[in-house]
Length: 202
Image 1: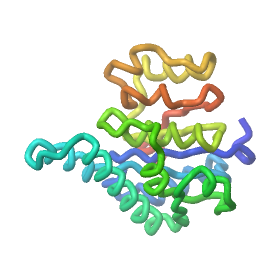
Image 2: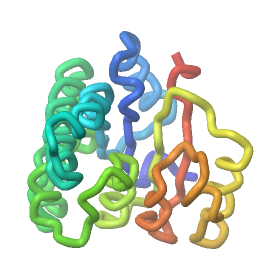
Image 3: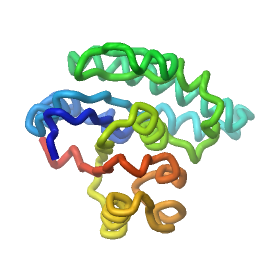
Image 4: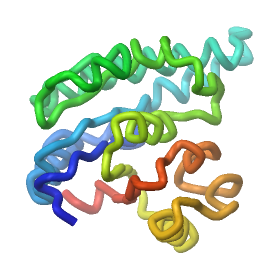
């Protein structure tokens, strides 16, 4: 693996957003791993959990909740950018993704997602799947999911299986997995997936 030349997508899990050490640990991890070219996608965290809880009370449809969650991701992207010093880049479509941008940046995909008709607008399509979709769109060599826990044995197996064949087992798609049920449907065959417990990297 040549981390210095490969472009990768880094997904920061929402469960990390309330961790005081997130910003310095993320920057340190990028430096130690020599990740010089990456786009960072930020999850929604507790605010998205709140939307899910409020849905029955408010009568929101799944699609309405989807767009509320996307708005939250835009807000968490701006917040993490302030805390890390990484620049934020707002991408509105595939064309804008091809334009020059900082080698390390946090990407706000809200505008692009609103124009993208292929993606599901439901709870099963979470920020992990959004990161997988984005990695596929820009043909990223790697997709790294930063989490608050380490993957279980069957989850490591699914990553290994995908790396060899471009497919994952049924357990990752429909079982109690570290990623959402639709995730592997959106991972490109040529994209290597890595799961990292960032809390162990501090």
